Image (cartoon, rainbow, N blue to C red; front, side):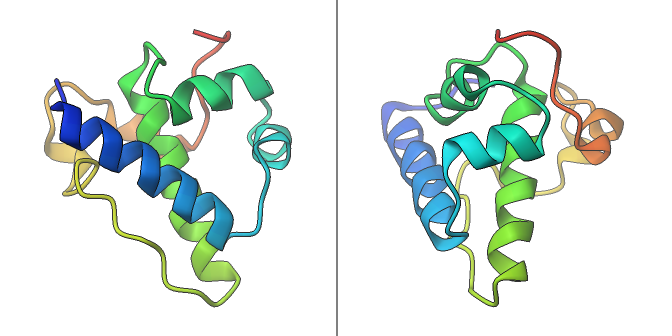
Length: 103
């Protein structure tokens, strides 16, 4: 999956806005998802190799924003039913477990 420059900019913004709405830091997210701060930053900057990781973080943030009683900012590029996308592993995304390592 390739994103346009506009989609990249929007997705980075949507990650940041939802992080702020959830009142979380990257350090807190990394701890809760059992990973490193470096990995979370790579995902936020769309530099992560695993495409599934972006969707896992997306789902996590949407859930966290809802849990604090706020309305999440919708993701424009990371939208639709990921189970139907051939380039994603729906079961892996559903597990909520990020890929191993920092890349």
